[in-house]
Length: 267
Ligand code: KIV
Image: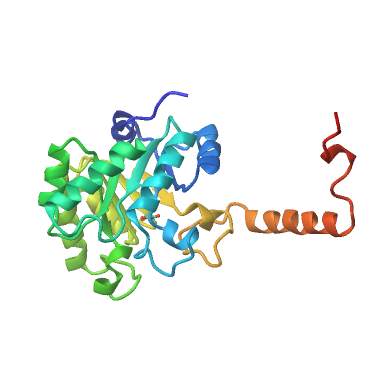
């Protein structure tokens, strides 16, 4: 399969093409996404919730994120893979941030690194861009800043807040970010952002104007206990897996497993 590159990402808007992005956290699922041609995979720190069972994204470690991003790369060699920097891994100093982001790139082979940015991190994005790292700047709802935002709330709902998000989008484009991720904003906000920047904009609950859309894969497969309203319910994989597990238990309890075909023979 031909590698999906930054040039392909940039070409989407002029060509009127919309891009599919999904979160992905392991090798086997990455292989399936690669096989159906999902162009963009985000190894999100939402792994803290859906893989590790934490109530927020804050506790996940850089080590864990590096390891699963490497696994996703191995499963999807052609996809454009975005590695996500976890809480605290790029905040202590410029040196710490550059070291950790470079580690993410070197040890995983990801194509781009996502940072949840406040209005005051343009210098960091510039520095990382100068170092040769493709940065996706995450604006709007930033789950790592839940303590500052006061909850997981829709962002940019007033004219003033919308203008602030648009202004940050323009600043991060100037700082060299190769793309933006816009989470949980009304469609008017993403429309205004798309009209004011040339770089690709990926939306997560951000309305139709975005160049591509990302959702947490568990939310579209009914593998999450609850899903945000913007995530389409596409399959009930949760029930399919439960049926298979129950069938396995039943096969053992009734002696149907292991059968003759499941045992090794003596030499
Ligand atoms: O970590 C993640 O999965 C994300 C998406 C929800 C945008 O940041």
